[in-house]
Length: 205
Image 1: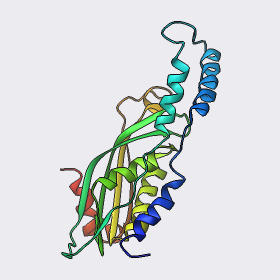
Image 2: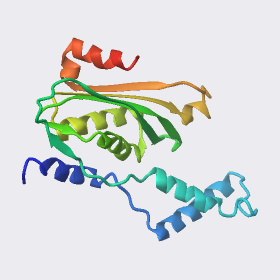
Image 3: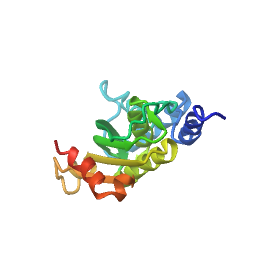
Image 4: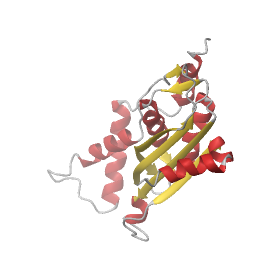
């Protein structure tokens, strides 16, 4: 296996368990269960506007629990670029694994290139792949950082996620507008105070 193809091959293996297929018969089973769930909570599922709601609910959750396949695209760092690359504002949409309610926000990712550089769109694909499952934000942040560190082998990686959790804003404390911020750092972005500050301070501008 060549150096150029190795990251893509590893990417396909690493993300295989993340992607989930939902055949039509599985959606039908989910829709029946959704109907029982809604009826048990007092929702009338026999009106013209709600009779298809269980199926819509099943399809919505299937979509939220499925990510698109992709291959990690890297390129030789021919110019020897050694400054920080930062991608800000990557959309995050996931489901809290405790209440199965959405949490949404943005991810900011930085890395210090080593021998190879990453196609920029792939940052969003990695975030999506780890988001589309029942999650906690702390784990999600660490998984994205660890995966990039392992497969890209940069000199440093930093990931910050800022998200609002509907399990906190719509129920329980009902603290609408509260934002949770988590971070995961590796390599020089973790070990060097100046490099860490460059990344974290840059997110405030």
